[in-house]
Image 1 (cartoon, rainbow, N blue to C red):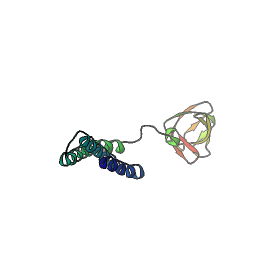
Image 2: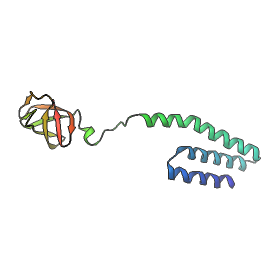
Image 3: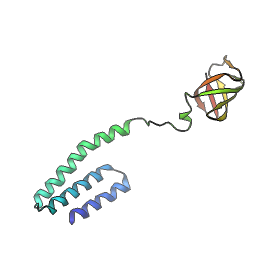
Image 4: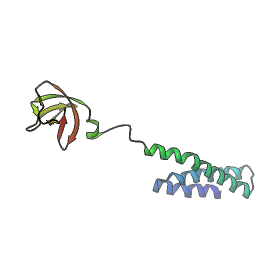
Length: 137
């Protein structure tokens, strides 16, 4: 029974702090409870608790770190618009700008190269979003 109380006690900080190590220790405590239920003495219970906890931390923690270090797979917001194709609705140049239709919405736009001009109906690619203006090539 004490092992289950310890497991719940370790699960609470897991939820509050989002530190996965507490969850791994909680699983170790449940393993200690299973050992006690199977008739293991105090020393085997602590050994199983320690072995399971250390094994989980040694195996799962590096995997979690690798996953956390990777860049998100799904771009959203203005990041998702970079690299998209758009259609010129109003002449776009590098100074006065113009309008484009991008992802179903009308955006103000300017050319990346100040000397470049894009005429109505022409396809352009979005390089960057600066505020509410798309920079296109």
